[in-house]
Image (tube, rainbow, N blue to C red; front, side, top):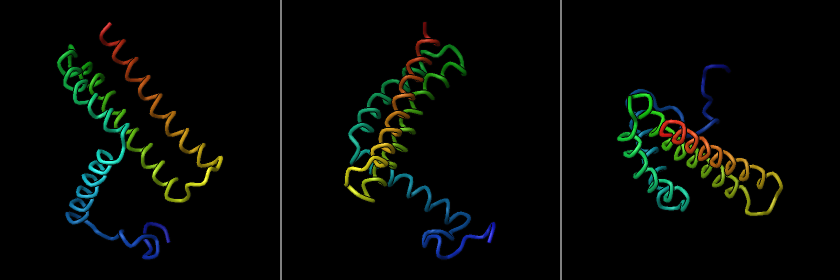
Length: 128
């Protein structure tokens, strides 16, 4: 049935309004904390973001430049979180070496690499 969430879809669906917002916020903070606790790459990128986001806000000559410099760094964190979620899901299914599992993990890693390249290009174009 379109537009209606069936009960069998997920036991976690069904909250609405303020309760949903509070639950979603709690889950988001839990996910962030889990990434900090368990993901080495995310911790490294978070440390770099703690340096480069303020630096980008300071070095940007106007609002657009500040948004580009800081936003490109924050985007790295977002893509790393998504990559970590893909990796955790693949590992949850099986630790067995499988070409599709490798493909999923490699594609996630490629997304992070492209985001790093994008950030480097943005910083070079804005500052040079």
